[in-house]
Length: 296
Image (cartoon, rainbow, N blue to C red):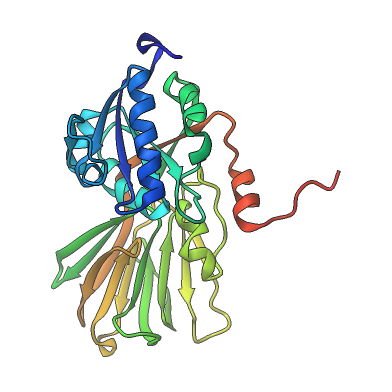
């Protein structure tokens, strides 16, 4: 058993999928085992409501970043995305336990979570900085709404399967006009999510790049574009489209009215995502996407 003075992370916050029995089991295991290791544990207040542990300190998600050194997110990638949009603003490391489906971001095995977590708590881990995108809706030249995404920002109609028309500018340089169901603007983190389903390329997490992937374009020549993450994207929808929507990670939705414009650029803060030392991004891809194994 590790001793408290040997730990790099001494204040740990637990977050989890709400109303999910398997997640609850993992959270209770973590709560007990981390306490035995001498770790000070804080539980996110919505997560705490399903644990029935009245003696455990709780905090809202917005306060966890200042109170803990490490956040453990138990659930699927969607739970990780929600936490990441808030925790990226703080100097806190984040790691995930997979209680979802694919689990590109939540890579700890819930059946062996303590064995995998002990070395991490002692400082044996690999860390990477994942950047986010900021999306802004401009109305009459002024910022009307703003959202953040760690996976993707999507411009689309507020109707199902409805084609729209828009112009794309990169750093004020006109790229093209497009008729399609919309546009997916993705980070490397999001390149294995919605963007991948739309035919976009897989970008390794360390790349400082973003992709523009058209949704069901009206021309066969429309293809995904990869640009540097330092670029500013300017989208000008046609006023004839009617009302559109701008979605961030499929969660935060902003209304785009006729004559509104959209700016998308790299967000100033990054998410510190950590993994066990034996983590391999390509092993994750092989496992999740069913790629072939070694021939010899």
